[in-house]
Length: 121
Image: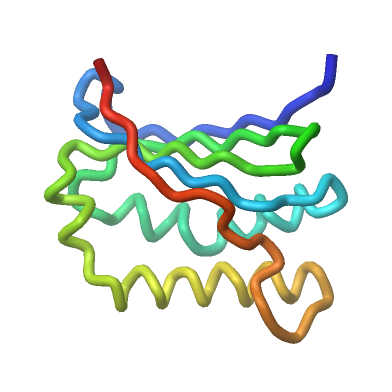
């Protein structure tokens, strides 16, 4: 059975979730530590300060070499109220840390594969 990587950050009860942001990104096996470092240096502290953020799970599939991010929000309205410019700024910080870790000078080492949302039942 293949191994997987799992990390979680939770600030409130899972029962408070009304929507889950679902993202998949390409993460090669040899770049797992860089991905985690980039997440810890950008998205993790920023998300913790956002109104409505409940927590997130980072998972990794060794067969597809994709990371799955499940980000739990108290409401869709709070999630979608975050200005796109703020998100873009944090994404640039994430990519800068990732590029430094991968020895790259441009681009996003971990491109987005899928973006969606899930509703708890």
